[in-house]
Image (cartoon, rainbow, N blue to C red; front, side):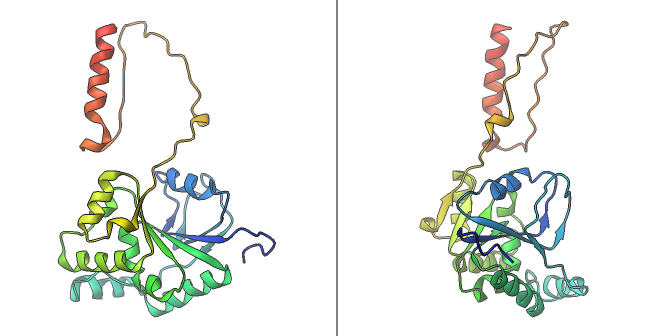
Length: 230
């Protein structure tokens, strides 16, 4: 149960797996909160040493989840939804923790939690972080359920203007969307003087998907400018 002496409102964050190695940005977002008391609800816990966090409730998948998933996806051709038992467990956690807000990572996960979003009386937020805006959207049934989820939540968070446009294309009202950019703690990246390589060979690395918004064109222009000086 949340600390009754803490006057800050409780915000519950649903993250199916807390937390995969590449999800440092999620960890920073949750642990960086100061005006809210964050708790986490997850199906499973991973990388505890990398991401220490003690305010977490595990609501695991039911043992027969694979059958439910098969029924929805293969027989009904719809995105699977949480069961009545899972819904009761999640509502119990939210009530026990006195949560005032539910934030669900990510868009394609929130689709499966539509019964929870509809049943819980307090505000719900879903956040899109990139590729999750495209998951199964080529399937009409999935697109329809995503639209229902977007109608049901209180607010929608996205990381960029391009994601905002993509979510609007899914049928979300634009005035329901907030752009919440990924913060970078610059104090964790102190300046380091670079030495000229003795063989004159500079090496630069940019790791990203090959899409425009990752700034690859800017990188190439910057490299061209660098070459003109060195």
